[in-house]
Image 1 (cartoon, rainbow, N blue to C red):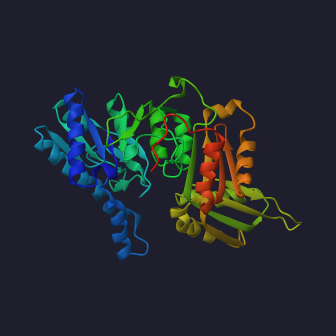
Image 2: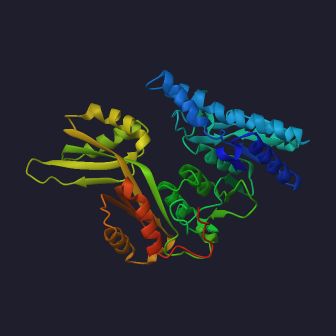
Length: 407
């Protein structure tokens, strides 16, 4: 069981989570629970760091940010003990979560869950601080935004859990963000492949790495609400889903930024130099477009998108290449992305044409495009994103009987 920040935001909610964990135990299950930091705690910790440093050291940021989840776990363990049950709270390192050395964006390498299994055998409920682990060099590391999801999936795989339940303030995975499309419907089942594309293109219900880990280790995920007992959305392998709808969902992001490099020599190895520098700085690149040289000068232009939060790091990684690899670097900070995802797209031609037609009919200019067999993504101006989501959701007929309530 994994509980998000809104689920443990105050004392009453922590007590409610404790009760829910105990109810599971009393139903005959052994329980490992992963908790996020309370409410806005992580944002407050980041603000504290920025008060004392313009560029906080990544190692010290991990030391700081890992405290939020530890607070939640200790408080919830106290509440469970008061209910007459035995609970133990563990840090990521105590729980045996081993990571690489990439501070603030570490990847899980191994889970040595011996201490968890011992506690379960002793009839204790185990509460693990999400979003964190210990590196191969014995430093505290954090897993990036949404990393508690990955913690939960990794622990579920390590202990052989029947299911990994992800509790948050939303009732499941929807065909679009209900805050933008009040008629969006809750999806009872989504395949891993669809969920991967949705997470990668902006759906904030699950972290991308958590879905990757679940698919690779065969962990069944159930996304559900912390605030009621209704079933949510089950994420499982494609072979277990009953059908492949043409379009499953419309997703979006307004956290994109675009960098454009001009005066790039049109010769082998140059693109490798650019994207190697970004990879070494741990910057993930989404879409890439290269315009061929328009004259005999042999200079090209390359544009690509990165998460806006990585813009400063990306620019710092590229600046040493200036003059040798490119002439000018420009940035657009306020980009958005809208995507349609659906396993049925594999066998239905004409979907791309319809997407472009719908956006064109709305007067929305498409700046970049990327596709996969089950996804089409368009980069557009961020202020047009809500209108684009509503238009595509309506055009593909995604509203249905299981719609979210307006407001």
